[in-house]
Image (cartoon, rainbow, N blue to C red; front, side, top):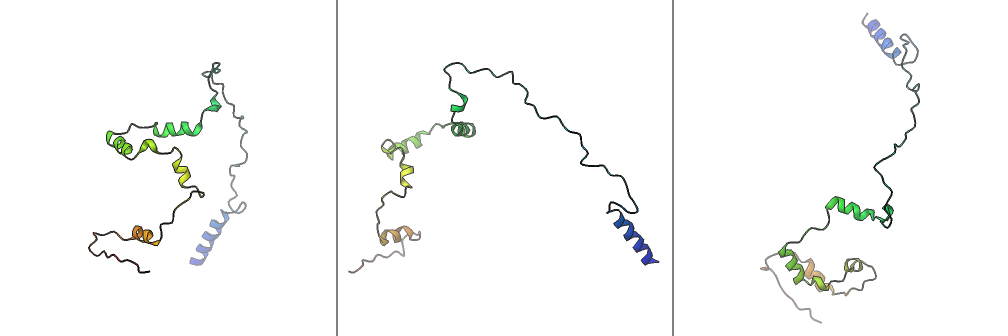
Length: 136
């Protein structure tokens, strides 16, 4: 009896999955939809033609406009920052130095292994530091 009830339940459950079977029900057709009207851009009555002599909208630098929108333009520097920049020689810096520093054609001076070792040395208070002079 238990097997018969289980089999009947299984058959009724599986028949609901198919398109035909014991419970052939009418389902809505998802492809029978009405055609929608094409999108139309409404006229913008707020637009006016540009005045003669004004720059065209296409000539605006979009990256500069985006930076202005995100960051709001250059901020005023504090007196301490201005003093530090002046002491560092801000007036003597070349305008495109950051571009030329990363250029593969930039000439660099090889300071040798000693300078590399000094720069790569671990930080410390110097109590365990030792100096040695290489013998040639």
